[in-house]
Image (cartoon, rainbow, N blue to C red):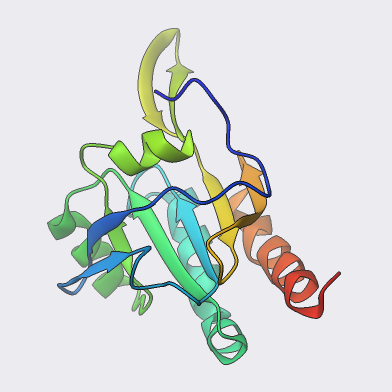
Length: 161
């Protein structure tokens, strides 16, 4: 678990992860391109499905504006592959099984449910510009609101607001 929280204006931590459909995604390969790195707790659960499907529905708009969307969960690649296929998700879903990337971004946190505490993924998103600088962070984002928040922040970022 990280002892510091990233802030807008910080350099985004480097990452390289395996993704759904085979292959990998890395911050190095994304140099010069803006991207949204969104962390979600578990594939094929109601909230995660709502969030992913909303992003997929709006993907043509994000693609035309030049924004790459990447979902990250602690699930193994086989599980995220099934999730991507089931919902026809065409953007990369990355597997962070050892939660190293989540720890670097401060999204691997202590959670509690029914009086039990455990470590898990916090639903959070990071909008990163083409220079690798974090421009916007959403912590504990609501799945249904996520896409609209991202679209507005990306519009502001690209218009220089």
